Image 1 (tube, rainbow, N blue to C red):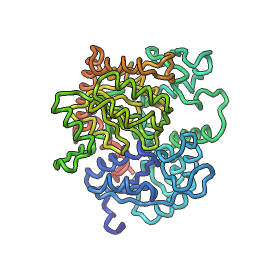
Image 2 (cartoon, rainbow, N blue to C red; image 1 turned 180 degrees about the horizontal axis):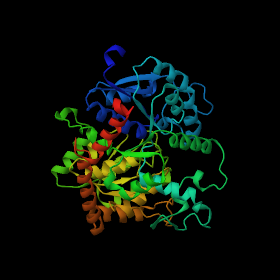
Image 3 (cartoon, one colour; image 1 turned 90 degrees about the vertical axis):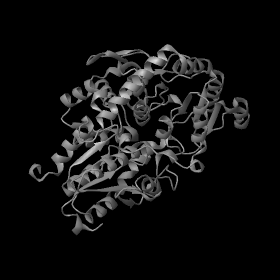
Image 4 (cartoon, helix red, strand yellow; image 1 turned 135 degrees about the vertical axis):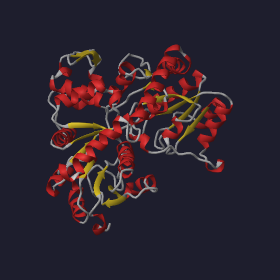
Length: 471
């Protein structure tokens, strides 16, 4: 990068965590920043993640800098540079903690760059705050979560609400939000332990402390979706938040004009559309491990529901029986994909009318933006809280039925079939679809250039950090 030609420009550094769900929103943010005049964006990553980022930003002027990923980290297999490649998510804490070993190389690279106006780094890269302080530029945090889930987590921790109930499934009323009830099972184990310790706890403390001491937090959401919780957070926290999403709307959806270049699953969706049939999209993200027994129940439930479905599975998911036999039985009613897909391209397809989802925050936003209702099946991290928001707060989806009623319970095919049919054909399904469509329109307005609430929020943030009169 030529520093001499960059003197009159604003320079922003983006540093996503090595996980696709965390990376994609910051790549969308890069596009938003580059749509403003006089902006340079530099994205930091590792060589193992370079091609994904380079392909995503190939039509932009963003610079990409690769840092070497730490080698010989105990427990982490050689060559693993992203969480979706981890053999198990139980290795997440050592993987995330090892990223601190990248700090010296990161700082060497910063020394060679034009002056940085500000940085947005993933909350999981807590150590970048020290680098920002050292070089004298503000650090903003991106956790890729809703402010709803952040507020609920803050309340249960500060008031120690998870240590009273005898059962993991006992409902707990939140005094700050009395209409909301949660259970211990809505939170990961680190929240439920009265005396937490170990690598995961150490990592959580580091990320929270760094976030509190950073300039503020970028929220991939829009104010109108969770205004009550945005107001609460900004009132109770010294660390300000800026709602700048849904960031997925910063990137125009892919449109394939040449039929020969269409992926097989898009051709299949086109065929369903021509036949006047609606499709349920099924995907559980790139992180969660699902047992072979649970996968089998999903397959039976989908088959017996008699809905058309497109099911995206991870390449490393176990077989749930004889796959070719199942595909033969379901005929052209279902299609199973084991490749990386453009999820938004699927969700905006006119044939897709429902989404059986783990409720990762990116998936929730993409579904809302497409006006597609969700059948919520949360499995880990912030997903149970996102599912509560989807089903109980904004009412854009229904929830799967577990066999014991627990948030983390096993789902049998009979319960899945029942809720799939309700989402796709039932009266409550129609209502949540209407709500999803309404929020989808509000989301688009929030991102409108110049006038949308999210666009104006980013303008305010950028002006405060980059305008000479404010520095």
